[in-house]
Amino acid sequence: MPNAARFTVLLFSILAVVIILFVWKKGDRKAALAELGTRFGADVSINGDEFYLGCSSETLTDLNELAEVVARVGEPTILDLTGAPALRTLSGVEKMPSLTSLVLIDCPSLESAEGVTGHPGLTEIVLTDSVKFVETSPIRDLPRLRTLDFSGCLALSRFEASNLPALENLYLSRCRELEALDVSSFSNLRQLYVDGCGGLTSVAGLSGLSLLTDLDVSNATGLEGLPGLDSLAELVVLDIRNVEIEDFAGIAALPKLRILRMGGQEKIETLEPLSGLASLRELHLEACPNFRSLKGMPPGVSQYAGFTHCPQLVSLEGVESAIGLEQLDLTGCTALAEISQVAALENLVQLSLVKCRQVTDVSAVEKLPKLVIVMLGGSGVIPASVENLSLANEELIFDFTASY
Image (cartoon, rainbow, N blue to C red; front, side):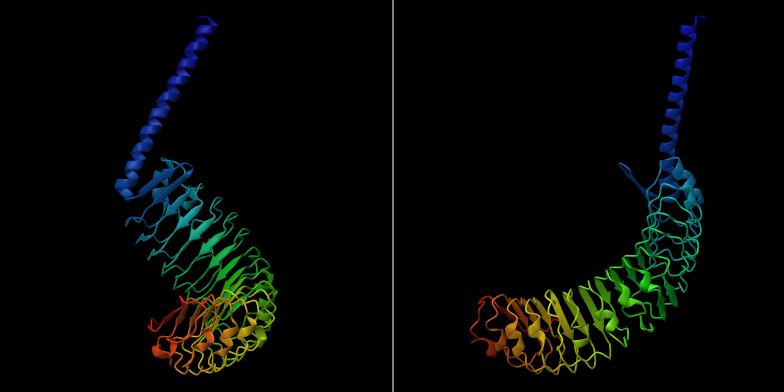
């Protein structure tokens, strides 16, 4: 047989094999998709490069069998196992190296992250409200992981994840059994949330988080200080509600802080310790039993200032420093009677005097051109007393409903 003929026969043979393999693979993929639905009750969505797989099957105890079927379909990027009732470990996830996102919300039997160690593609692990989850040590050697969320893992008492060089966001909200946290090895962190961690007594390594922008330790009532706080030069948002702070010097040293939420601190009496916060735009201060004066008000506060349920606050002297202030909330300040300083706030848009029972005169708001609403429910002001005010803004609303 001439060489040309042999080449033609060989070429057609190869082509035939390719076609057979293609048809077989297509048929197997179709069968695998059907199996995912019938055997695992899975939800599959493929859109371009994104391959979403959702599964909450009662048969799942690990991911080994699921991964074998999925491999016949393609390369998943998002695996959502929300509500899988029997899932105990993540063994088998290593068979899906294409995954970038792993979502495990409310998996009541999940105890361990076994299987994720060394995974090459994961950028996000969302493991929230899985009440039995305790074993974080397998979460290590993940070069691309940026977000780790353990919020609501009520049994979690130790955080042992390691070698996560790209980690930027760590959420441990409501991990009530967590006793101590060391973040010194996560130098790229941008956000750290430990709010509601009532058993937490210490957070070590804050001084090394030079990129941190958001820190929430609210209601972590067992915390014994925040060493290293003053080193957070990029911090923008700080929430320390119901965390007792002995010395506010560390907060006052934060050059880029824009939003500060405080509450329940017995040591703060005036705003003088915070007067140097030049970048501050929002100040939330609530239920501070000894807070009595706005002296030292940071002048840059412009978006919002709230001093709520502070029983010793009797004067607004100092608020006039925040000339650009748009919203002022004084809800529940039962000893406050005099609000004449409000007249200086020409940019004020909203004012709340709800449950300020000693306030009877609001004539100070007459000449404020931008003010659109004054909330007076439960205050000492009676509707008849505002009827004859000469208002700069005739559309100003006096709301007497006690909405909260």
